[in-house]
Each structure stands twice: as structure tokens, then as C-alpha cells.
Image (cartoon, rainbow, N blue to C red; front, top):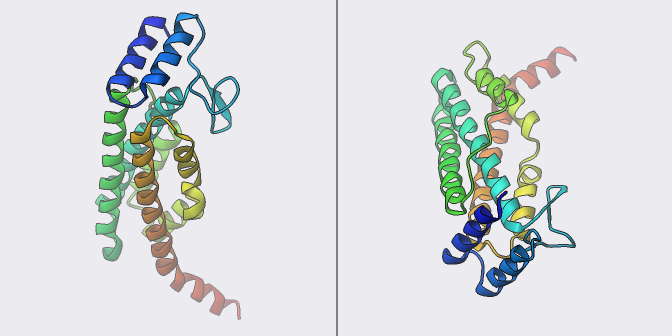
Length: 213
């Protein structure tokens, strides 16, 4: 990243109230000395997700970009599922999940732009396969629910990385609070899917148990 671009990011962050004047001045001093900005939570940078970023803001920008792309894919995947869903009791819920995923992507894209970041992350091959899977009308809804719960894991475990990252943020309070709400949304979605999965797969499990007696 060029020094001029990094200066513009710093200035924008300061003007938007993301960082304090003292932090802005400290990071400018580092920048003028030819050293990458620190603004970290440990020696040599900001540590999150098992890696070290040069600053808190760099970690936030990277996170927002990846989640923006992932949530956009999630919105498309659940919308595709809703179009072919044959189970009346979950169809509207799936549509709500699709809308929730899509608005997360829009909000994170907006926040990324506010921070001067660029939308670089793309939908992965795994994400494309996930959308195709959920949009496949030949696959029963109860199997899709089983696949999703296996993919995501327990609801509380699924949101743990989001909550931990939010707690690390000391300067970007706007993103921190947004992540708290994001985690609550994701928890709500995961719990509903787990409950739906248990309800729709219970008859098959009972039948299997009876057959084995």
C-alpha cells in the first residue's frame, strides 16, 4: 500500500471519528518515519484470526471485505432455496434468512467504503457450490437443513469468532457495535435452522429407530 493511500485512510478515519486525535497523530508519526502504522493489540501489529495485521483498521477492512462477499453469497443461496422449497412451514423463514444475509452484505460494503477499503473478495468455489446445492429442487429440504447444520456447527460456536473479533476492537467502535448485532442475527438464524432441522428430521429418525427394533 502506498504511503499516500495510507495517509488518506488515516485522515478519513480521523474525520469520521473512527480514531482519536492522539491515535491519528501517533500513526502519522509512524507513517512519516517510514514505519507501518501500529494501532495494534500486541507487539508488532494487530492480532486476530490467527494472523497479525499491521493495524486494527487493516484487520477490520480485511474482515469486512470477506464477510461482505460471504453474506452476499449467503443471500443468493437462501433466495435460491426459497424458490424451490417444498416445505411450507420453513419457506417464509428461508426468505427472511436470505434478506438478512443480503442486508448484512450491503451494510458491510458501506462500512468498507467509509473506511476507504476496496471490495476485492470474490465468491469462492465452495460458495458457488453451496448456492447450487441449496437451489437444487431435487434435494429434499430436510437434507439441506442437515447439510447446513453440519457445515455451520453449533450456533454458539459459529458466532464465537465474530464476538471475539468485536471485543478486540478498541478504536473502530462503529464496526464493533455492528458486529455485535451481526452476531445476534447469525445466532438467531443458526438456532432457527437447527430447530427446523430437528423438527423435520424427527419423523425419519423415529422411523429408523422403529425399523431397528
